[in-house]
Length: 471
Image (cartoon, rainbow, N blue to C red):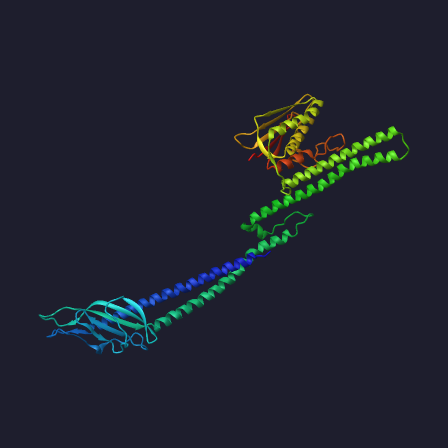
C-alpha cells in the first residue's frame, strides 16, 4: 500500500500556493508597469504630435496651399532610434512625412488610434491624432478651414527594457519572499505537528498492563486534537473493559468448568477405590452423567454466546426469512409454562397483531425464554409474569417482560448483562443457571440491531424491555 505523509502534503500545498501567489504578483506587477509606461509614452507622443501640428502653416494664396515648417521638429523620444511621423490635411491630403520615413511603410490617415508594429527589427508604437486645428493660418476672403490628422510613432526599445527590468526586480523580490515564506511554513508545519508526534509517542506507551493515555500538555492545548483525544480515550476505555471482561470470562469459565469436572473426577475416583455392587456403580454413573450433562450444557451456552457475539460484530453471515415475532413469543411462553406451573406462577402474553421481522425464530425464542425463565425464577410463589408485544405505526417492535419479585439491587443492575454474572455469589450447583442467559439475550438482540434494557425497583419487580427494528 502506498504511504502518504501529512507533512509532505502540507509542504506541497504551501509551496504551490506561494508559487502561484508569486507568479500572480509578477504578472500583475509587470502588466501594470507596462500599462503605466505605455500611458506615459502615449502622452509624450501626443504632445509631440501636437507640436508637429503647430508647425503646419496655412497661407491664403491663389491655390489655398498649406505649408509645413520642418525646421522646428521636436527631438525624438529615444535618442538611439528616431521617431517617425506623417501629417495629413483634411482637404489637401498628405502634407509631409518625417525625413527618416521607412521606405515601403504605408500608413493611412484612418484607422485605430493606437497600434504596434515592427520595422527594421525595431518595435514601434503608433498613435493617430485626429482633427488637430491649423494654428498658424492667414484668413482671407477665400479662406477654407481645414483640420489635420497626425500619425506619430516612437520606438519601444526603452519601454521594453524598463518593463523587463521591472519584471526582473519584481521576480527577484517575489523569489526572496517565496523563500522566506517557505522557510516559515516549514518551521510552522514542524511546530504544528509536534503535538501529534508527542501524542503518538505517548500512545505507544499504552499496554494491556497500563491503559492510561498520558496526554502531553501541547496536545491538550491544541483544539484540532481534542476530537482525536476524546476518541482515543473512549477507545482505550472500551478496550480496557473488553480485556477485563475477557480475563473475567476466562476465570469464570474455568470456575464453572472446574466444578463439574472436579465432581466427576471425585465420583469416578470413589468408584475405583474399592469393589462395589452393581447398584453403587449405577448410582455413581448416574451422578457422573448428571455432571457430564451440566458440563455439556455449559459448553453449549458458551458456544451459543460466542456465535451470537460474532454475528453481532459482522463476523458471521446468515440468510434469514420473514417471521412473525408474536409466534416466537407464543412458543417461548409454551416452553416456560411447565416450569412456571411447578413454581405456582402464571404467565400472561398480550399482543396486538402480527409483527413481521427478518430473523431466525430460534434466536428470538431463546431470548424470550431466558427473560421469562428469570422472571419466573424470581417471582414469588403464586405470582404472575406479564409479557407484552406492541408496535406503533410501523415502528420498532417492543417486547416487555414484567415480574413482581423482589427486584434487582441498584448496584447490581448495571452488571446483569455481563457474562457469568449472578447476583448470588455462592456459585453452587443449586443456584441454577450459569449467568450466561442475559448475556446471550443481549448479544442476540444487538445482532438484530435492537436494544435491551432493564428497569427494577426494590420490592416491586423487574421490567425487561427489548426493541427490535422491523425495517
